[in-house]
Length: 570
Ligand code: NOJ
Image 1 (cartoon, helix red, strand yellow):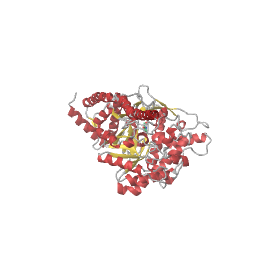
Image 2 (cartoon, rainbow, N blue to C red):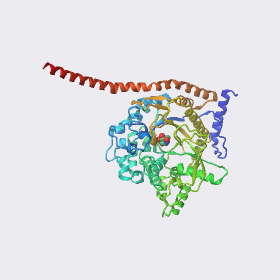
Image 3 (spheres, rainbow, N blue to C red):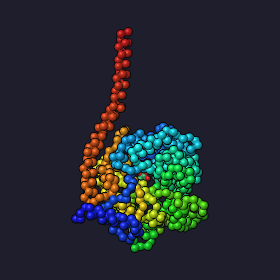
Image 4 (cartoon, protein in one colour):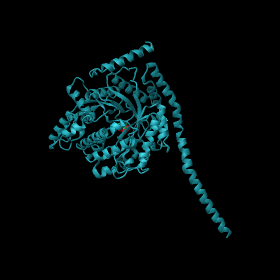
C-alpha cells in the first residue's frame, strides 16, 4: 500500500493536470469500475434541496391561492393512496428547525422554490400580491443567510396558479409568458437584494410531458403528440423573457445569475458497435435534455427533433410539424439566455433503435423518437421503479453537456435516490452507496474538464413525491408523516454526506470506509427514537383528543346530575 500523503499529492497533481488539459472524455472507454480518491476544487458548493409544493404544506393558509397541484391531488385516483400536499412536511412552519438540519450537514447552499400562488394568489400580479407570502420567503432567505447558507431559488417547480390553468389552459397558452415574467420580476424586486442564484424552471420536461402529454402530473391533460411540444415552446420563451428581464433591469444592481434546471437521464447505446443504436441513444438524450438546452444555448431545437417530428407529422397527414418553430427573431432572443445550467440527474437507460408505428392517432412524444429503452437487471433499484443506480451515466451526461453546449457553468440541482414508504429503516446503506458513487463520477467529470460548481443532494427531507404521494422517500432526513408534528430523523446518509462535505471529497479509501461504518453505527440510535414514535403519536392523541373529550363529557354528566338533584329537591 502506498503512504497516504503520497497518494494525496499524486491525486492533487493529476487533478490539476486534468483540469488544465481539459481533455475530451473518451466515450468508447467503459472502465466504469475504479473509484477515484481526491477532492473537489476549492469553493465547490455543497447543498440539498426541496420544493414548495413538496414540502411547505399550509396549502390554504395566510392568503395563498390554489395551484394546479392542490386541485389535482384532491381529485380521487390521481395520487397514490389519494395523498395530497396539504400539510406535507409543514415546512411553512419549520424554517428554523429545517435550517438547523442544514447546519448539521454544514451545507453551503439550500435549493428551494417559491410558490407562485402563495405570493400572487390568482397568478396575475395586477390582481393582488399576498404580503404574507412575501414575508414567509423573506424570513426563509434571511435565516439562511444568517446561517451562511446560500439560497438557490427556483421560480417554477410545477405549482402553476390554478386560475391560469382554468382561464387560459396554462402552459398551452402564450399568455403565460407575460404572467410568469411579472411573477419573476416581483421576486427579483422583493428578494433579489439577497438571492443571487435564480432558476427559472425546474425540469420543464416533466411539466410538458407528464402534465400535458401523459397526464400523470397536474394539470393531468392528455394532449398526445402536441401538448408537450406546445407547453415546452411556451416555457422556453418564458425562460428567455425572464432572463432578459433580469439582464436589462436587475443584473447591474443585484449582480446575480439566472439559469434553468433541466433533467436528463443518460442514454447508452445497447450495442456500441451498431450505428443505429448509437444514433438512437443520441436521439434519446436530444429529445430529453437537448429539447430545452439546445434552444437556450444554440437558439433552436435539436436538428434530430425537427427531422423526426417533422417527418412523422407529414406521414400522419398533418400539414405542419407538431413541433412548433421559432422565428429568426425568437431564435436570437432565446440563444445564450443561461448564466448557469442546472442539471437534475438520477438514472440511465440502455437504448436501441426501434421503428415506431406512426399512423394517425398513434402519435406521441414517445413514438416520435423511434427507440426502445432497456435496463440491466443487475442495476440496483431500491425505491422508485424508474430509478436504477448507474453512476457512470452521470459522468457521461456531464461530459455531453460540456461538449454540446460550450462547457457552461453547471450546478447539479438534483441527484439522489429513494426508498419505499413502508421502509422505516434509517440505516440507508444503499443511499450511502448511491451518493458515494454518483458524487465520485461527478468528481471524475470535473477532472475531465466539466465546469461543475456545486452539487445539490435531492432531497433534504422525505416529502410529497408527486403522483407517488408519500410512497417514495428521497430524504436525507426521514419525516414521520403519521405524526401531526412531522418530526424529522437523520438517516445514516446524513452522516456520510456530512463527511464528504467537510472533506470536500474523498480523502482516501481507509477514511471513506470508516465514514460508512460510523454512519451506519450512529443510525441505530435514531432508529430507536423512530421506533418509539408511535408511542409519542399515541400520547399526542391522548392529550389532543381524548383529554378534551373526557373533560367535556365529565362537565356534561355533572350538569345532568346537578339538574337531576335540583329537580328532586324541588
Ligand atoms: C425531479 C423533480 O424535480 C423533483 O421534484 C422530484 O422529487 C424528483 N424528480 C424525484 O422524482
